[in-house]
Length: 393
Image 1 (spheres, rainbow, N blue to C red):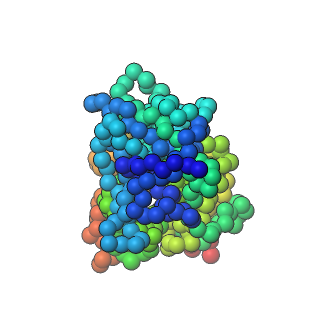
Image 2 (cartoon, rainbow, N blue to C red; image 1 turned 120 degrees about the horizontal axis):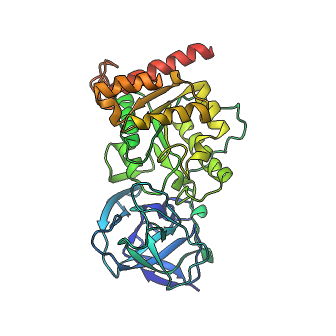
Image 3 (cartoon, helix red, strand yellow; image 1 turned 90 degrees about the vertical axis):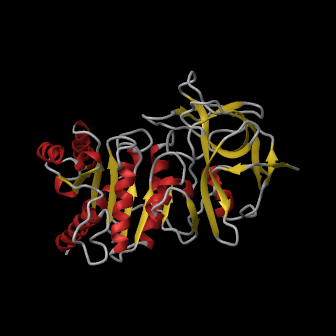
């Protein structure tokens, strides 16, 4: 029988322990511990060994029950202290501007040490061992029905089938937000667009298809804030809700299955689906989802791509989107930092042939939504959707 161990925090990436079927009690501060070796994809109980100053990742985004509610939770970020016990997920991360690392290549026994790779609690072997990182000692797994819990056991999106027919795409319009790298404005674009569309009375759903698990982007696009409360009425989901801690090191066909599950779920619940991929569409952990034939068929019939770029040179990603995804320039809009300067905007339009729009500019979209930041994006998207409908008809 598994022993019970007290823990201080649950990372948001293991939220399925509470949100998936057969959940832990909401107020749990103890978990049943199985002191067994754990592989990548497992849910782990770990103790903070050290949290030195200067770490690129020095805190944890945690999930906690919202007091006074039976169905609401909150997220917040907390600095880490040696001796704290955390529930995290084992996996890898690819990040050009932050920590990168891989999931453990062989099972990690109790007492083995790993590195905290991201704020959402994904833990593995950092690829830059000489820099300061938060060290975690693995204590074991969380007992779930007599075996250690795996992320794939924690699917919290209920009852929707995974589309398999490439020609049978949803009738819901799809906006795919991508970019040239991490931190170039993708989520800012998605959040501004969603805000303006909602202000105009349109029901928007959001799906983060790839990346490394945390809730910040979901919260920003769904609620307009990076942390705080959420409940089962949220209209934003990511690959964590389909049972992945990270999309890095996941086989291509498996990753496409998870992306299709997310997109199919979002299409059932929204009038417009906004989807996002991490980093660039050609990056490890994103390319399989971004080039999925079913997704591309949906985009060509009823969708468009918003590409966030931060420099004039980074707009070259538009040529990759054309050649590898088969999306024509009239179905691509460029935004991000490069669209905020008039001179850069003119030169980027000349180089790419695509339209550039500042993602925070208002527009005459409607009496309600036109003054909203992101109104110019929403105006362009809605006109594009209506033009596509006329072509389809």
